[in-house]
Structure formats: C-alpha cells, structure tokens
Amino acid sequence: MSKLDKAQVLEDFDKAYQAENGKQPEVVAKAGWYSVDGGKNMRLADLAALTEELSSGTATETAKPAKKTAVISVEKKDKGIVIVKNNEDGYTAEEFWIVYLAERDHDCRLPQGIV
Image (cartoon, rainbow, N blue to C red; front, side, top):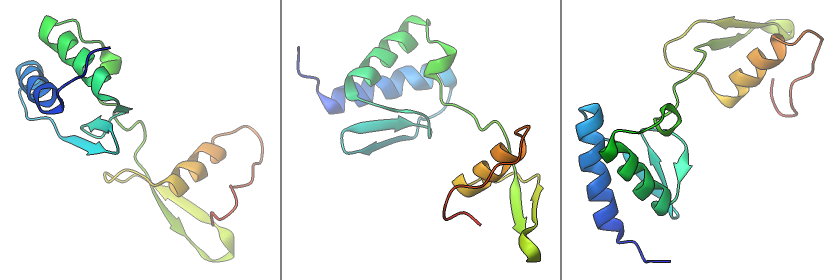
C-alpha cells in the first residue's frame, strides 16, 4: 500500500471537482475523514479514487453529495400536538423522526428524549 500525500490528493481533487462541477468544493476534514459539500464521509484513499473518476468523466451519481429529500419544520403546541410545515432550511434529527414515524401505517412512539 502506497502512502498518499494529503496536500497533493486534495489539490488534485479540487481541480477535478472544479472541472466537473464548475465550482469550488467544500471539503471538511475531521479525524482522517473527509466530507465533500456535506456529503458522505470518506477516507483519503476514497477521495483519491473519486478524483480519478472525476478526471475520467465516469463519476457515478452516488459519488456526488446527497441532497435532502424532505424539507420541513416542526412546531410544538400544548397537549403534545406537533405540526409539521414546509421549510427551506432543512430538518434536524428530531424533526426527521417525527416525520418518519408519522408516515408509518401504524402508531409509533418517538425515540426517548424527543418531544
């Protein structure tokens, strides 16, 4: 296994991403993991492989950052009633669970600590 140069891999990825998408990528590095534009975390070797895919033009749709599937906001009223409304800011984990369980075909309880 060869040792990857972090600076070189990030520079190459930056160039390939800009050529493919026409914008600067937002790469967040934390504890050896890298996240591109808020997408799935990946290791440096995965980032190097993605760079090769972008350069060759064979990048798959899964390699690109995931987009939010639902946009909601939650208002809590008295007596435990929860109202869910559309919102352009996205949703939190608590809001996700409220919507996910509300869409089920049977009555479900929220995880402990929510609402």
